[in-house]
Each structure stands twice: as structure tokens, then as C-alpha cells.
Image (tube, rainbow, N blue to C red; front, side):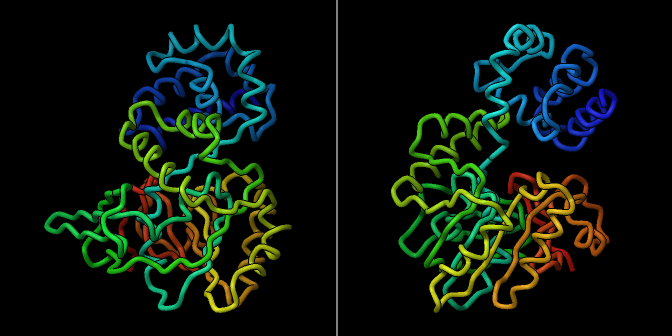
Length: 322
């Protein structure tokens, strides 16, 4: 078990953090080489051993970004304080910029959309129609704004002009489903979302604050419930004159594979529902097998099980697939 945890932390450092967060890369590699920390992490339930969760909880409690030696010296004597936070919280990163890589799938509908997000966290990704976008490629800048003008949340995304959407979706009803919903109007919930943002990512931190302010003016309904047991009832509440879209991003890595497949079977069984997924390469193997291009740590965006693009994990880029 200890060796598996160490391997997982090294893999996370190699795949997730290289070139993006030197601090968390150093922490993850340090944990992988620390027998004492590995033993303490091994005592946690498997779902609670994730680097993002451990590091987010530490930062929530006041760990200062820096060297691994400083982190280890800080966290070991505070482990008894860390465990309750880890057990109570989840890795509910709510990155509004992921809306940019969902737009190539969401911007094609002529009819009004009832948008349902599975694993919604605080619901920031339920507002793709309220944000402004700047799609950047080598020779082009495509600006896309809501009808009432430039949003206070402006999202930049590297995307070829041919793949960039020409319009925003018309979302007339939106709702989320989450085991433990967060509320951006709650100070502790917002502080937790901030703690999950990687230390060097100040632009993401500013975007969180701006998106939270926007969403707080018209907060979504997020139902506390299970992605299989409670999804049909939520879909049934969508207005009759809308097209239902069920989407999720960086969520299905957490359920066990058998339960993941049950969710896929459920959404695929609904002919009047469009399913949009944005997940890591290893999460949905049937989708990943259809991708010939190297994924390289990016997420695969798919519509009804058919991959259409590769996306940066935080929505920073999108490459269309043929």
C-alpha cells in the first residue's frame, strides 16, 4: 500500500503539476519519499489520500507555499488538525474557465437548454452563458460576450479559430447535483475553493472571486444527491420546452469504475438528453480508445461518448479532434 501511494504521488507530480505548479510538484515528490507522511496518508480511507485534498486541507489550515522541507515540518505536528478537514471536505475544485472548453459542445444548440451539472461543487460551471471569452490562437483573437455586454468574468483560452464557438448557449434553467454542495455565499466554502487553487495560479484565484460574485447574485439550485440515484428526478424537473444537457468535468475519477459505468449506462439510456463529459484520459476508457492523438495529461471532451476535443485541465486550452 505504501509503495502504491508513493507511486501515485509521483505520477501526480509528473502528469498534473510539471510546468504548472513547482511548489505542489515539490510537495508531491517529497511526500513520495517521506516514510512518515506516507504512513499517515495510508491510514486514511483510499478516497481521502489524494494529493489535491491533502495539500488543499493543509493550505486551508495555514500551510505557506514553499519548500517541501518547510511543508513537512509544518504538517507533521498538525496532522491531528489536518485529518478532520480531510475527512469533512472533498476535492471540489470549481474552475469557471472550464466553461470555455465546454462551449464547442454547448454552443451548437438552437433550442433553449436546461443545463444539469453532475458534481457541481458551487455551480460556477453552470453559467457558461454569463461569462465572456477570449479565444486565442497564433493569428486570431475571437471575442465572445453575453448579449448584455462584457462580463465581469473574462476567460481566456488557447483555441484554433476553426474550433471556437460563434455564440453562447441559451441556458434557461440550470441545476447541479453534488454529494456535498458548496455555496459561494458561505465564507468557509469560498475559502475552501480558494485553498484548492494551486499556489502559483493567481489568475485562477482572481477568477474564482469574480465568478463567485457573479453567481452569488443569482445562485443556482444544487441538490445534495448521488449521480445515479438522484439524477433522473432532477432531469424530470427540467422545463418541458428545453433540451436537457447533463455535463460533468473532472468528476468521474472519484466513483469506483463499476459505479462510473452505471452512470454512463444511465445517461446513454436517455435519448432526449445530451451528455457532455470532460474527464481525464483514464477515466472513461471507451471514450479514450477513440482518440488517436496523444492526450498528454489533457482532458477529453466528449458528446454522447464521442470525443470532440482535448482540453487543458483548468480550461486553459482546447484542441479539436477530427
